[in-house]
Image 1 (cartoon, rainbow, N blue to C red):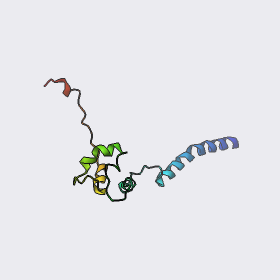
Image 2: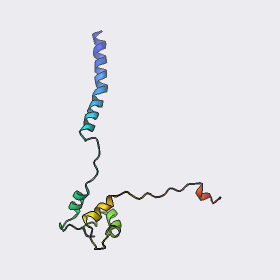
Image 3: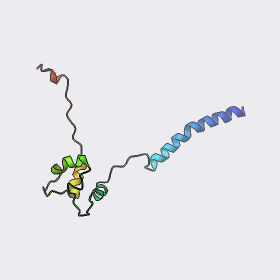
Image 4: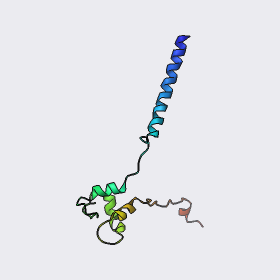
Length: 106
């Protein structure tokens, strides 16, 4: 009888301990992904610490290079922190095409 109780206790502990560990991780914030801080990323890109990003400073970031002129609202040739933060806005979604709409039957 003692062996059965010990075996059941061991199985119970083996099942519950990982769940408790995961719950503790989530409570500490370690289990959640944090959004990137635009100001910190901006500071890393701003090699000359001018407070503005030039095309040369963002050259390694292909996504930012593509959007550079669009984000440069004041057309100064450089991105301010506020202009850079705009790149973190909602991403554009391509509209989905319905198969029925492509049939040409109306």
